[in-house]
Amino acid sequence: MLLHHAGHFDKHRGRGASSLPAACDWEFRLEDCKAPADTEDIIKTVRLVNTKQRDEELQSDFCFSLIRVVLGEDEDGEALTTVAPKYLLDLIDSPSFLTRWGPNASKMLELLDQMLTEQSEQLEASGYDPSGARVRSDDWRHRCIRADIKTDTFRQAKKRLLEHGEIDIAGDYVTRVKA
Image (cartoon, rainbow, N blue to C red; front, side, top):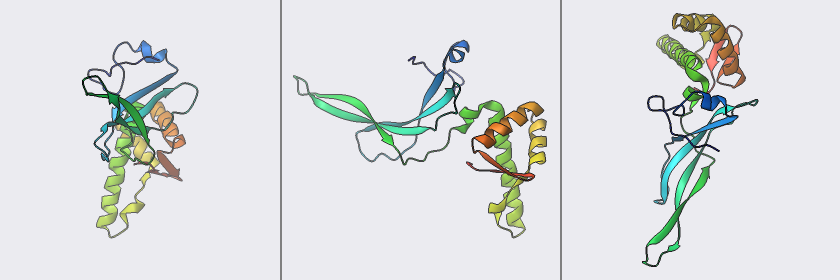
């Protein structure tokens, strides 16, 4: 196992040569996670994000707290401590899809979210239920192409987003699932 610092400018990748992740079968990133502190012994809460999984689907993120545990006292009466992880099964924190999907798919999701927000506002202004917002797939594709996403890249990323449950396509319309 190799532990590595995050990049200086891009905190979503390891520092150093790009050949390092290429040589790995698995890659994970630890990032801060916001969670209520239910005890003063919690040092911090972090999320483990699977950013690369060779020959398999990416694993789901999970969060855990780092808990200060007192082991005893030294000869001066000072507490001897260590840190233990506590898995947080029920913690729901903001998804890390921006780092998981890469810049093109992330941009595509951002554009889709913008379009769905616009559609929701139009529905609400017309007296309709805004939760029924959906966007025509062709309109989404055209907006992505105008944002300099190549047609083949759009098609491949759309397929991955659909397979991983980030979007849903019904007929000519697309909606977000994990927005």
